Each structure stands twice: as structure tokens, then as C-alpha cells.
Amino acid sequence: MATAIEWLDDKLRILDQSRLPREQVLTDLDDYTDVVLAIKEMRIRGAPAIGVAAAYGIALGASSIKGASKDEFLTQLNQVMQAFAASRPTAVNLFLAINRMRRVAGGESVAEIRNSLINEAKQIHREEITATELLSDLGAGLIKDGYRLLTHCNAGPLATAGYGTALGVIKAAKDQGKEVSVFATETRPLLQGARLTTWELRQENIPVTLITDSMAGYFMQQRKLDCVIVGADRIAANGYTANKIGTYTLAVLANAHGIPFYVAAPTTTIDLSLTSGYQIPIEERNPEEVTHIQGVAIAPEGVDVANPAFDITPNQYISAIITERGIMRAPYIESLNTVQ
Ligand code: MRU
Image (tube, rainbow, N blue to C red; front, top):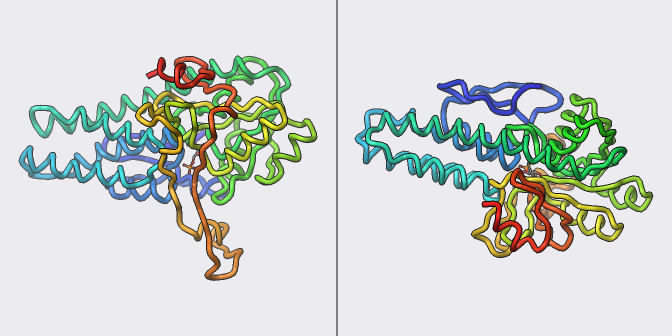
């Protein structure tokens, strides 16, 4: 499978997720502003992948600052970091990556700082790969043979630049010899489920059935689902979780039907600085994403549109949060505090 993000020393190669599955286009980015744009336009997307891309993007930005004194270099580097911080507000992995990059920018010379930034970006990437592998193995223990799982949005290798979170758990369950099958919601407006999750699962030979977002309740009522598993963009200290819009609806439905609802995320997605999930900033995106599908208008011109990209799932609907440091259960305010 093509990798979501690859560092080629002087440029960043990305698999353009906006064009999948119709075309597999690899794009080389050597200007940090193009990396910022790729994140905004969701050619790179998914919380951990955004963090990794931003780290490499900052390293690229640092290499492009030429002929400056150290002070001038640091001022310009700060502007590069600000540009990434303004790209997407919800996934905390982005801000964690920026802070880590900021911390290593304290070397003696500009050349030294440039080097440390590249090394730190590679380290952030390696850590996400390891974390997603570990959490997938741990989470697979919750999945029983024959399980039919529902997932929302896309939380596979594309979204993590690693092994995947929700999809990682499903893949690991299969590797443990369990027979699993998946219902993937299409995930309007940008169809990450229809376009990316189905694409990734088919490559893994995991049976997948695509449904529209509004069909989930029907299949739960029909007893066709054994659990729901999703990724996360930010988890507050109380366990309230931001994930793709529609996740909250699925959690309430799962609760009403007595179906376990799991969140799988590396600890880089946990934000202990927020005591409540309602403090998580929710990105509002371009109305065109709702009025159009793949460039084709489906609504009357000028109609009022709301387009929040994420919602918050309260902790009472979450059966467990699967991280690389263990499977966390309520009370989350206590269990999550032990992982970071
Ligand atoms: O807007 P997106 O596509 O970046 O949103 C992605 C999600 O909501 C994912 O579920 C989340 O980032 C987890 S990715 C492992």
C-alpha cells in the first residue's frame, strides 16, 4: 500500500487523499506553505498524520530560511510554526507536534537547529508508527471472533502515517486469527468512509459493507452490529472525545442498543490541559463541502449551510479508550491521567 507521508530528506512526499480512490497521486512538497495548504485542503488528514506532516513541514520551512542571523532565523521559524497552528484547529496532535518542534529549536547554530528539527520530525513519525501498532494489538483483545464492527470516517494508515487506530485494531484482530467484518459509514460531507476506509480495508482483505451515515441505527436495530470503533481528534481529560461529525450520533445509538463503543487513539491525541471536551475547538469548514459532492452542486445555490467538521462524544457513551499505554475505562478523569 502507498504510504500516506514519506520524508525524502529535502521534500515531503504525500499520497493525495482528496483524490482517492479514483487516482493514486503522489505529490512532492518542498515548500512549507504547500504542506500547510495540503493540511487545510485535507490532502493530508487524520489527527496523527496532520501532526507528522506539520513536523516535517516545519523542518522544510526551517531549511528554506536563507542567510539569516540566528535571531532572524528564529523569528521566521516562529512564523512557519504559526502558519501550521492556524491550519486546522481540532486535532491536538498538530499542536503537540508544533510544541515538540519548538522545544528542539534551541541549538547553538542555525545549522544545528535545522538538523534537530529534521531529527525530531522523524522521531515524531516513528513514535506514531510504534504507538498505533501497540494500541492496535492491545485493542484487538477486545474484538471477538466473528465480530461485525461499525467504523466512521477513516482511522487507518492514511490517517495516522502509521498502522491505523480504529482500523489498526480491526487489522490486528484479523492478524490474531479472528474473523471480522466491517460496516463503514460513508461519512458526509467529504466521504472519508466511502473513499478511504473501504479502500484500505479491501487492500487488507477485510470484508467491508459501505452504508450511508443514516443507516447505522437500522443495522443496530437489526442486530447486525457487535461494536462500534472510531478514532479521535482530541480527547479531553474527562474522556469527552472530539471525532468526525456524526460520531456522537453513533455513540448514542450504540448506547441505546447496548453495543460497545470504543475509541482508539494514541496518547498524542489526549489533551489533559482541557478539563471538559466542550472546550475543544470545533472546526467549521467551507459550506461548499455540504452543497457539493466532488465538485457537483446538489443543493440550491445560496442555501444556508452549517458544516462543523467534528462533534463531541460525552464519556458516558464510551466503553473504553484504547491507547498504546493501555485500555482506559471510566472514570476517565483518573485513568487518562495515568497515560501522559
Ligand atoms: O477531517 P478529518 O478527515 O481529518 O477527520 C479525521 C477523523 O475524524 C478521524 O477519525 C480522526 O482523525 C482519527 S484518525 C486516526
